Length: 219
Image (cartoon, rainbow, N blue to C red):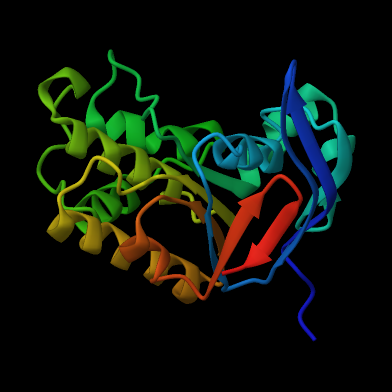
């Protein structure tokens, strides 16, 4: 039996005066695409941040590729994310002073693995071929979302965490982006955890789970 690439046990998180979730268990295998849905405010984005070590947890543990992320300090977590994770942020987080191509290339540059061919490949895959020299302020919201997706995939991470990656896209472009994510997961034997309100996006996953205050439940 293949060992899980990501393993979550007993995860709990609350903000002051606002309990979110507790008792969350999850295993994600290499090559598996998992979608997480749930009511607004239940903490789906926070859950992704906890998986990545971007938010602290109140209880429980997260292990990715055999490393317990929740046991690492901030510097170790940052280095681990750089090597193993690709994160698609809902708010894009592109750097305005860098071109599209340079934004996408950042994960490779941080690993000293500059590869213009790979950058061009992922830009083509998300429908942004030929726009590498443009600055972010000249792009639409949907195009910026695709820049964020290309950046998350460029270094072929073991685990992709995607926060509403199709939220700013028209249906045709959303379908193309989901094709790219699915191809990356199955072709590269990566794992993906997607949080979304889109039934169409969730339907592309191998499993759909609902996050509630008491954990993750099959949908």
